[in-house]
Amino acid sequence: MGNGYILITGSSRGIGFAVAVELSKSGYDLILHYNRSAEASLKAAEECRKNGSNVVLVNADLSSSRGIKDLCDQVEMPALN
Image (tube, rainbow, N blue to C red):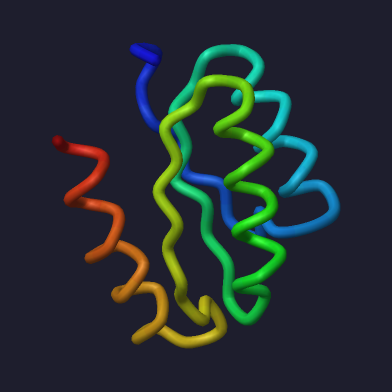
């Protein structure tokens, strides 16, 4: 949508989901992170896309340094293109 991408961790439910939806309403494209809730994250992405946002889903376990590196590796490409 032109305002840039925002990364939201834990976006498949609760506060992360609510933040994602509100930011999508404000014109941001989103990178939505999830760990185990693939189905819920797809629903979050669908909700945000209804508001016109481009959405990229990324999966990573942020409880380990390897998971954080995986997230960073995945985020680089969509955010820069």
